[in-house]
Image 1: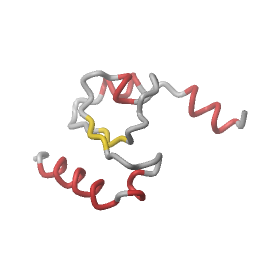
Image 2: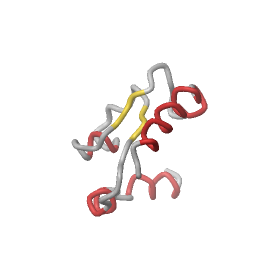
Image 3: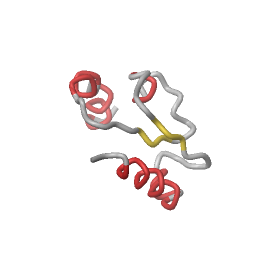
Length: 77
C-alpha cells in the first residue's frame, strides 16, 4: 500500500472534531456508509447527502453542493 494511503487511514480525525466548537456540516455522497466516514464516526455531526454523486460530489453536482454550502454559510454569524 502506498505511504500516502497508509497515512490517510492512520489519521484519527476524532480528536480535532471533538475539540472544534464551531459550526459543522458534512456534505457527503450516498456511498458514505463506511464506519470511518465522518458522519458515522461522530453521530451528532450534521450532514447532507447529495444523491447521484461519487467521491467527487462537488464536481458531480456543483449546483447542489454549492446550494447546500450557501445555505449552511447563511446560518453562521
